[in-house]
Length: 247
Image 1 (cartoon, rainbow, N blue to C red):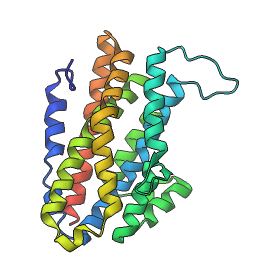
Image 2: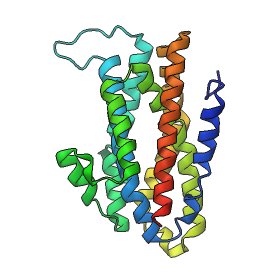
Image 3: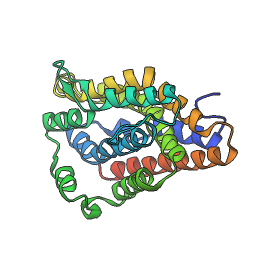
Image 4: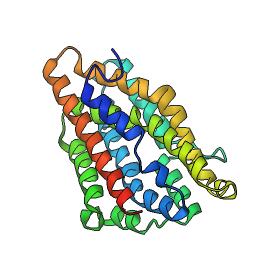
């Protein structure tokens, strides 16, 4: 099977997001801050999708019981959680990727006020329209979706997309910002490069294996998986479109 399981709509949305016109407009620290202050909500809710996969596929209950899922799948999820929740930062200190992103925001002067307020009360009122719809979809999926739908949004909307998307952002940042400015965001560069490395090289393959195991040969599950993946990509496109309009 290929990475898009033969679905043309997924392929088209992936290519659209890989080459989104917003990236080339990140040509100032002003626009970089706008992008990061919005994107941080997508960085945060990623973990809710992953935690739902961990909750259902591995055992996080007490007393512990063996998972009913294949042990290969349990290992896949635990390996992704290890990398996302306790990776190493630029100094070799364990850190989750959300915290890495907050450090990157601080170094470029992007405000973390909205995301910090959101984490206190988890209310969506302070989010823009596209941010709210994006977070609302992913949280609802993490809380109430079928496990194969969650795995599809995680793979198609995150682990498969992020390496290509972040590669484009890195290239455009290098092309658009002055040389002296490029040394002003080492944590952001590390964050982006790290995701290109681990998501592109390992996590995307693990996430695809997870989806294929969960769906098997069940056509109904695959149809629901496609729908969840497509919706996830559409909402990401709406988020980038809104950010671009704010530049």
